[in-house]
Image (cartoon, rainbow, N blue to C red; front, side, top):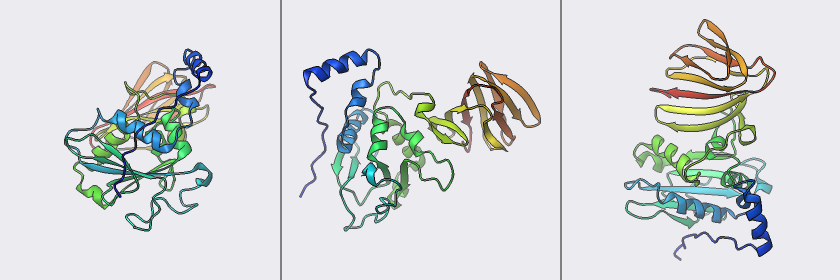
Length: 290
């Protein structure tokens, strides 16, 4: 049986609910969106529609999504690892969709898995809704606090990924474009949209091969790069709010909002908040290895 493409079915609220949404929107632009509890298939279908204008013309790619109910999502493996049984005919198809991207064609979202999937994303339905409502970006959800961390959005390349040209760059571009249907693309900042990564509240921002950036909020007493890390690429701290102390190599300085600090390659560095209110900064990294 041929699989049917999934198409978004917009809600049709009652007049009173619609009026309430219109009133709330004047105070909060996403109030109506957040009020609707969309099904995962409808969310993915809406993202697919928005993604049509972002797809590179020559891209050929199959991406699989595995969405599990929050009630059984205490851990990825609690009701069977959704990353397991790749390509198995016996693997459960419920909660699975795949995005078929072919050159010269509009991307299509279809039910079930696909044997040629190059990337697999596994997520709970509550995390999917959080991303859809703008409460968290996919990059924030996928980031790992430690190597052993199991983040809210899990990613795995398959054997088919080796046939995708510029695989790493393609994956990063897809993560940023597909999972963020807002136009122009918006990333909300603030501790309420962040996850605790590298010892601070963190929101990854924009990244590509040779470039990365992130928003960080350090509470009083917290440190960023607490072990005094050193990397092969150039970096910078751009301080937006608060006060603290920075160490770059053997040099140390008090810092405050409205200042930026450059970190050369292979030089240890550390930022700490020794003030009495949050220290907020943008971290940049660029060059080979970033």
